[in-house]
Amino acid sequence: MEAQNDETQRKPGRPRSLDRDVQIREAAWQLIADLGCGALTFEAIAQAAGCSRSTLYRRFPSKAELILHLLDETARAFAPGFAINAPPREKLLAHANTLVKIYRDYRGVAFIHMFAASRSDKAIADAIGAHAAFVLPHYCEPLRALVPSASEDVIHFAVRTLIGSVIYHVAARGDPASEQELDRLVGAAIYMAQSEPV
Image 1: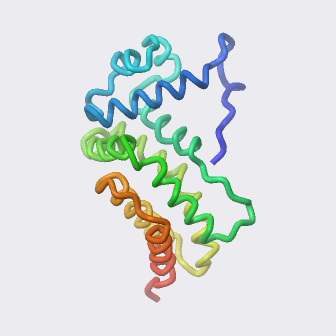
Image 2: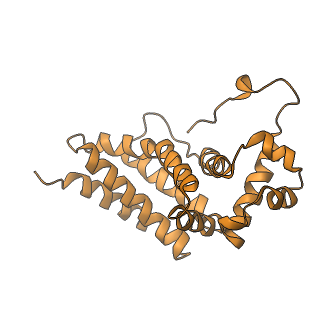
């Protein structure tokens, strides 16, 4: 997951502060964790991040855009580092470990709030869907390499089950899986992909 360079698409003016972006993201994550998505107003974020509302409006035209930014940029910030020719299972395990790092604290609580809100808020649901479209290929590629005979539906089901299992342990239970347990979850996803009914 490489950070996108969108400076070429920005309008002329003062350069965007990357430090400010991080402050805004962390303030938003914490607000959602503490109070839920309903409390995520631009005024509350501006106060928590120590910036003006105009700073936020310049970056995000809507709450949904802000949530998508939170999810995508946090994933980029925690992207695992491995050689491009690393074994596929190693890649899959590295991505599972990344989920643990991202969601083992207040972000995990916030993520559960986002999922709950997405049931009744289409904008948040769309943001989560767009984030899934960004993240899933990074999991599907190594699993597809391990089980090339599996259909796309089965690959996606196995990957979503792996991600859901890790997030359940980390975010819902607050009990991050150990390296050995993560390896077993990855093994289960591989087995699931291999066990497609004929």
